[in-house]
Amino acid sequence: MALTNRQPPRIGLFGGSFNPPHRAHRALAALACQQLDLDRLIVMPAGRPWQKEGQQGYAIAPGADRLAMTRLQMQGLAPVEVSELELQDPEPSTSWGTLQRLQQCHPGAQWWLVMGQDQYGRLSTWKHVDALLGACSLAVAARAGQAVTADPALPPHRMQVLALPADAVSATKIRAALSRGEDITPMVGPEVAGYIAQHPLNGA
Image (tube, rainbow, N blue to C red; front, side, top):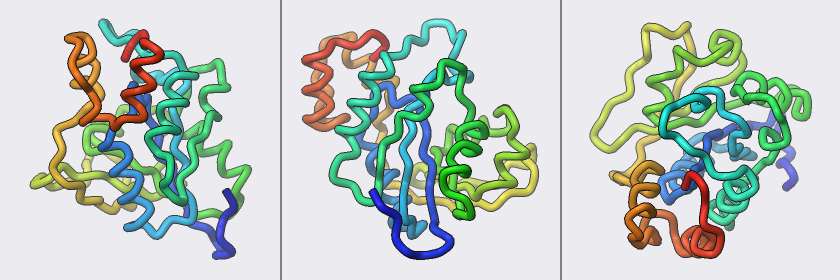
């Protein structure tokens, strides 16, 4: 997907385990593109998310499956592209490391890091957070009726709040529904539900 001719281009990075990707992920991607006026939104399934490694009881589906499902979930959204950059890296992935690699491909771009409210609440524990916040602006999705206030544990940073409609869907709830044999189509859409039906997933 080609960038527009605007200089510098505005590019968003939306990372996550997408285990599995669901309708709230798609809604956030669409909202970020619109409200941030992005030329491109790179959706990045995590390779080996260091925050998740070692978590008791947490299983993650194979990268190839998460990539395929994320592409299905995001299809038809412009200017969204799903990247396999982190999935190709055998080492645990960090947002700062990924952003550095993307900056080399898009020198001079203005970067936005798109995340949910829960991720923002844990941001102070991320590796290299000072460097990360110095290199990009944040776009944080607020749950309906909840305010997002700047975390005093973080260094000064630029943040825009994205107001999502009320939606209780989460990957945890989807995995629980799958374990009970329930229909997950309303939460993930027919394409992803069909993929999971044809490819039973370890971790989803």
